Length: 117
Length: 114
Image 1 (cartoon, chains in turn blue, yellow):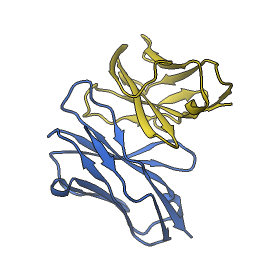
Image 2 (cartoon, rainbow over the protein chains, first blue to last red):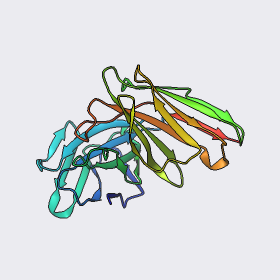
Image 3 (cartoon, rainbow over the protein chains, first blue to last red):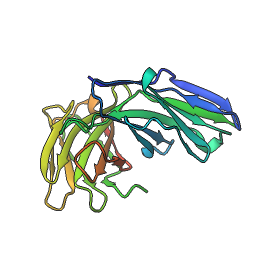
Image 4 (cartoon, chains in turn purple, blue):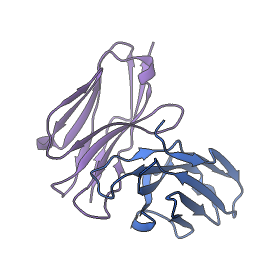
């Protein structure tokens, strides 16, 4: 069965500090997809990134970067020079693409990030 | 704005009642997913439809049902409501039925059962 673990329940950092959110996943499939979503205080779920299991290249998008390591089954998310607008709950999620009818997202429990001005 | 719409935004009702949540997917998307977010269970997958047909079921209670209509909008019906059904219900949509496609989420419907 697939599982996503976000061990950090809450993190608080001072604005402009860098912060890394951890995500560890479990799956028996060789083909799978990993995602990060952001849930700001307004409540919606905002898609941030998708990564497939065959692409271990790290990705950078502005102040956001992601580190995917299959060897440790981790997909960590780093925010550089954090801003107050980054305050939100961040979810890591897993989808097993190999099996038809099994495209559901399995979410971690989320990490609540608070940026202190 | 993800392009997925959900109505109503808020719903307050009493135990034992029945409600219907509505979702319109992004233009062109064929798959619709329903998720429940509650404090004790977190974000959980309920059910998926693809082009009008049920494709996968998750932790959906028998009191809950869903359907996807020919115009691809979907409805989630919740009946015999209990206090524990209070939650944020999300709809998501994607184009392909495989896990290769990203699911985009609507703003959610917050259900409060009193």
